[in-house]
Length: 345
Image 1: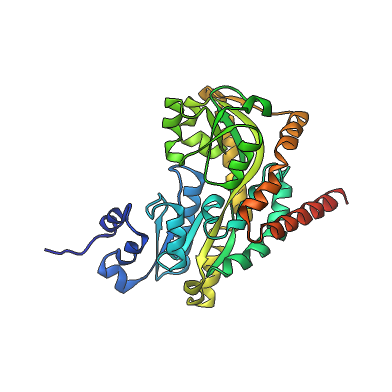
Image 2: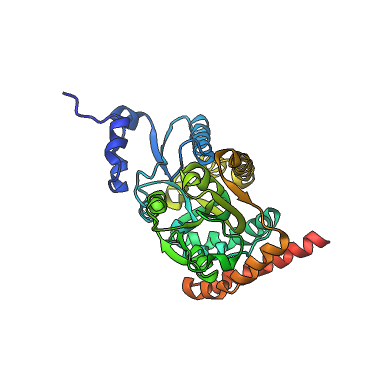
């Protein structure tokens, strides 16, 4: 009997296992015929992230005919910290992940989610591309990774069983936070009772009353079952959620110059992913009222109250992150000031 694993069988076997198991996957025919590379991440079914990964796979395989790029984008490699550890060891060649996950490799990235630091999407783009990309490229290179570009998720907002229109209404409310330090800092600063949970446990926690709400992006709120359990969505836009697309530098350096450029631009670039992600977010927002969700848009004055309440968390965040966090924050401020000067010129 032929004991060789098919690709489908091999990837199924790899679920929940160490990411190093992925290296042996694929039929012997594939291994003889093609170079195999793995791109890992986490994407919800039918999300814009999933579509971008699928388009990335097609571009790579169309442009590099002898490369078999295999997507493992349902969390098959385990938690993000395991994914990034595998990426650094070249067990996985390309990886995408959230700021919260990336912080296990480069802690300073948590500063980019400081509550209410950014005010508009054009400001986000200006500061991230002109100031943050060079700064973090160096930090990632020190870990054996090449930062290709930012990926876009969108504004982080507040959801709850009962509407929370002002910071004072959040005092003592049990609010779910991710492992991200900035998320925890925001909830603590507005007086909420911070409950840190994996996202997979949020819906059951809402159902049992362990939590009363939390913070997340529009995409995650819309596609993960939260709308029926916490039907109040306040567009606080208190941080801008992004991710990173990275590649193992040793692996990339081993490719031809032409193939390297294909990999670098294959995901579509920051501008392309932004357009796709933002269009998806706008479309999802329009569907929420028909699904029984009350969407609240704070006025400029109300947002200022939120901002003034949360801003003191920045100094605490710098201290908690450590490393070069203060230098990164100073660079962020320079970028913000430079953007203001450009916008008023």
